[in-house]
Length: 133
Image (cartoon, rainbow, N blue to C red; front, side, top):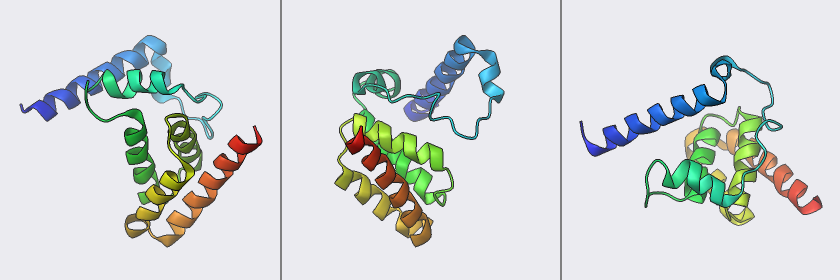
C-alpha cells in the first residue's frame, strides 16, 4: 500500500470514528438544507479538522474548499445548500470573492455554462449576505 492509499484509509477511518462519536444515526441522516446544522467554522477549526489532522503540511483549508467548490460546480451545481456552505466556509478561510468567482468560472469547462451560472448566482447571494450582515 502506497503512502497516498494509507493516508486515504486513515482519513476514512477517522471520519467514520468522528461520525460514530457524534451520533451513529448521522450516517443515515438526510436533510434538504443542512446549512443551519453547519454554521461557519473559524479558519483555525477548519485547518485542524480538514487540513492538519489528515495531512500535516498538506493543503490548507482555503485550498481544500476551492477543490470542494470546484467539484460541486462540476457536478452541475445541483447541490445548492452545499455550494452556499462551501462558499461561506471559503470566505471564512480567507478566500476573496474574486478567487471564488475564478474557481467557479474554471468549472464551466467541466460542468458547463449553466452550472457555472447557477453556482455564480449562489455564490453572489452568499457574498451579499455577508456584506449585509
